[in-house]
Amino acid sequence: MRRMNGAEVILRMLELHGVQHVFGLPGETTIGWYKEWQRSSGIEYVLTRDERTASYAAEAYAKITGKPAVLEAPSPGVTHCTPGITEAYLSSVPVIYFSSDIPINQDKKHGLTGVDQTALYESICKESFYLTNVKEIPFLMRRAFRVATSGRPAPVHIRVPINIFHDEAEITDLYADPDYQEYPAHRPVADHGKIRKAIEILLAANKPVIICGQGALISKAGEKVLELAELLQIPVGTTTPGKGTIAETHPLALRVIGARGGMEYSNNYVRDADAVFFVGTNTDSSSTNHWKLYGDPETKAFLHLDIAEAHVGNNFPLKVGMVGDARASLEYMIELIQAEHPGLDRPRVDLTEMKTTALNAVFNSNIPMPEGTVSPVKLTQALDKLLPSNAIVTSEPGVSAIYPSALLSVREAGRRYITNYSMGALGYSVPAGIGAAFAADGPVISFTGDGSLAFVLGDFETIKRSGKNVTVILTRNDNYGWIRGEAILLDDVDAPWTTDFGAVDYVKVAEGFGFQTARITSEDQIEETLAAAIGNPGANFIEMMVPSQDKIVPFVPPWVEAAKEKKLPYFY
Image (tube, rainbow, N blue to C red):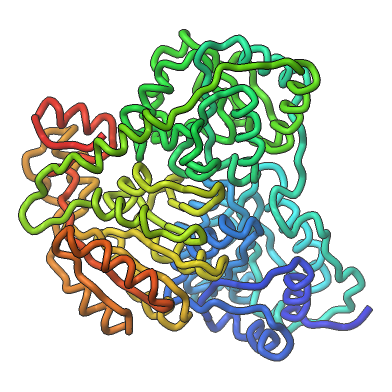
């Protein structure tokens, strides 16, 4: 037992939970915490230039490390963290989010920066705590880590009034629960009888398929997914956020499916399947092409395994619904098959030729690009060739994500490709690249568009200061291309009036931040430029003009159908 101030208690509890980095931005209401931090803790503070950046960086850090990330923001910037916390909540990513505050009830006197932070974050966090005395900090922080990492992982918000950092108390329970330093903290196995029923359906199916969402990555279930797939010779497709669950070069890997990077061959394959086994996916609109991807649901058997009960059977009628951890439940499923079907001999399935043919058709299509633009297909093809195995790629909705989602090959299973396709807000990829760079040692490639880049240019300074190997690739078209494509292709708008904006010399801007820069103006420059950036251990920036989505239509099934009717060039 010893007397401690609130700032020290928080720091000791973070250390006991194995926290190595905290992402944030300073404010007056947090100075008391920093004073203690500077004196007594080796936890690295990652200073960003915007609370939104810090929130996205923390979300990406948690995705890569498999550990809950820690985020902090002062009361004036408390609202700025909502984009990253919302993405983390919808993506089932644990973030422990501290927001400092003015003294208790001073908001009722209209104290500057006072707002009901608890009410603000209750709807996008699993729980929201209000620290009102120092003695409760150990209990509430243990609960925060436990809640964030158990069941369906998600953020937990901790509201800290300024006085708590200075107040003191006798602390008798300074310890952490070691189970909650990583996620998933616990691995409940789904109902055994339902697992047996699922096995029967998969064995009886003529053309089954496994579809993995990011829940399979969250559970670290890739090895068991592959073991089951090989045992039963079932192809494995993934949603865009689930990309990398298994190596995409494996003979059974169907690669990405759906409306955000699914290709014609993979989408047709799952449409024609007679049994679909969902693993760790919420069957959202983008991964299912607005729930039309699988055709008539009455013509096939749907199975669903997920830790979140609300997701199981939410959008498709199920033959079997299983609530449990993906890795643990699949491990038990495999044990049952091996024990009860020892002589199992399934016909070999090899999708290599089908995938290679489809990819080569895109890579070799040589669709003429509009004047002044370079093919994003060629960019992704070159990056696929050069990317080292320890690299991490971040991307965000728009032309910057759609091509690598479809064409980039994850050759080693794991979370090496991250997007924000749960919420889909702009301005994600660069902050995610910052979080990824602190989470791992390899080079980071951040694909962004100019619509998104404008949100986060200030944090180029963060990248440069970090000394990390981050390459930002700007696929530029001087408009909000996704909205432009949607309006022109699906709503038959001749000329959208809210999508175009003025040109900026982004290369000069990046140079001002101290980046090594390059501008690609022809296909023959792509490979050499990428190789130089990846080989440079510091901050890199590459700009390439690309056509907007209404000029060359990418891998979005409804758009492709419209492109066929309008006789526009497309990739699919």
